[in-house]
Image (tube, rainbow, N blue to C red; front, side, top):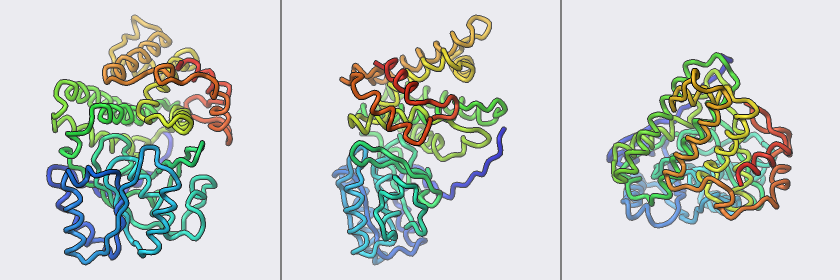
Length: 386
């Protein structure tokens, strides 16, 4: 078990009518000028917009908004919002929605106090001197960005991340009822995203991490059980609540304690979604299946352990390699059960851009910690994904 520091100050407000506590939370942070970031009109249908409008009115908070966030959020909108925020003297950014809205809000909170271009945080790793406080009302169960210290943005062919504890939201309001009417596809790509975050953390080369091993295995079991419940009844609010909470648990860094997570698969998928604008969760389904196939041949021990403990592959009956391949097949079957594509061919993607994407992914060196991946290896994994 390796040494670690764990810090996460996000306040979780979970459950039915939790959005009604927004006023008190804004009052706590003495907000004077609030920028609301979201995507589309759904927040009005769900009644969230009226809650925000009422809270800001009662507290005398200046209120501006932008509902133009799209999946795989771009730097162009962030730059526009930074300028708007500076003009309005915004001192608090509130995101409503899923990972795209939250990551946009995080970038805006970085950019408003900054004199340079906000993309410098992502491209050059500039350390911020000041970050505006961020709040979240989560309406999906997927990215876990509502309690994470990371944000992902796109700029043309580049999709880059930035990490800093100061962009962890001050609070995250989670009412599972807000997720009940999500389209099935959005629900299930979200579940794939949650599973990918758990798997990235599980695939660690640390051999003495029993506590987090069992925690992650338990979280995966809970995710599989509740995904099945949603397949049977898409309006099961208890299953949706479990998955919404799992999304946060999977990505609030608690499960990193004592281990080094991999993240190689995510680096590959970021290139795919930057190049082809595919949905991240479905992209992760494709890459995860291919990555596990590759690792079954190269370094199977972690995969075999998970196959035994979660999927019942008996070590007396199967070798490490065989159990690792069983894991890959079990994951593929799960994603297919969710109605997701598991190959690049199904997404209409061929191999013509593989080398370009692999070079971009490894521009600063190999990626991944369980087994570092160079450009040639990434191309080979992408070929397994065809």
